[in-house]
Length: 589
Image (cartoon, rainbow, N blue to C red; front, top):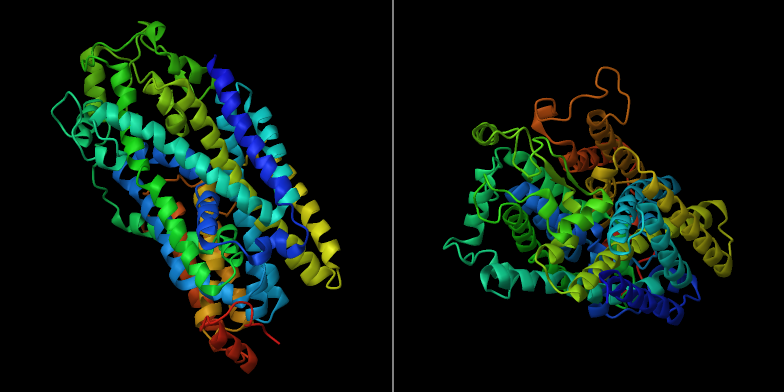
């Protein structure tokens, strides 16, 4: 049986499962469409939340990021998992106590302002749309390799699958589908990692194998990797970083961005009781940890496997020839995500850091004319089983897992967008008398339109698509998180403070990011070189969400201090939300 047939069987079986669940869990009311009827058990909700969170960025990209950045990549692990601690302790139970359907609805009622609700809708849409581009692109990458179609065709297939179970089932269908998708993606991620860990270290647990001994070299695995990459002119995988401020700010941005992402927050509106919201966050951390403790090992082992494949004898003067390259390289060259350029004309593959002093010395010693081998770091996880020459069924499993990760998060994001437009914009402002049946129809139409837009953006990504995940976190951190924190824990912040705070945090963050990426014209600053020498106080644009959040906090507090006091009934509402004794009984009158 060919590898293509195996891939098709695994992917087809997983899609059949998702379709079956969508038909079984079809939403029949707005409550089922928005919050799955409010009756999802905590363990199941934790599993669905983990799938919703562990997107293409986690499944496909994170190991590649850690492989490329080494120690600095731990920011992703600490930031994303730390965000769930914030959710569990500071947000989830209180938002569930409030008993509403969406984040903008909470902000609108708490700050007694339709304007605040609309600003929250705008922030949610900007964050969610930027995030969903990355998910659709991830689905395209997975399809292009494993189903042997071009990226655009892969996007269309992914869109049809999401359309079917998301539009039909809403949150109810998405929840149960995401439980199945979590099972698929976690098995797909860990089985190859176990095989490779056994092969390289003899330890079946990748997290322990990462710190174990490398088979055959007498060194630790990380020591062996550091030796190989430094010999080739790269920075050691375990090397410390100079700019600790950026690392702290980036980690903080990811943490509060996680706690402010609407598609994650709405998962805690789906459980029966307030206590279940906290338990859901706890279970989500357990399920996420299974992948996140494995990712650093996958990153290190995959990177080491690539270099030892090219230099099998360990002698850097004797790389393999392009004609004798392994099958996995041939497969990925077809996708355009892996490239070879014979700069020497000798037919051999030389790969090294030709921009470093060590790399230049190596090139001069061996007569090399420049690095000849490049690959998209997003392929590491997907190519890992092929690199390690694992059985064909493992490759098919990783194909299904990568698609499950991308589709599960895409569905959650699209639901957050459609529910905000249908419930907060149409029902909340344009037509308050809209019936439940009419609102459900609007929600489904909005979901369908959102899928079409997301597919188009996936095919024609804007210039910032490569940074889309970090940008989405920065927006959520700078705009939504402070409003939620003030809404729950402060009686003094009023409607005007919330509106001006969200706008200030959003604008200052977007402007700072845009002026270094060349996406937005600011006289005298447009197209500034995106490097540390030009950043204000050395702050990376992708770390600026935490600064934007501080601006939001400060502006909201300052404006509230010089304007009228929050009405007494809203102060009473905040007081009732702070004591989560039951769900849905803290409603403004």
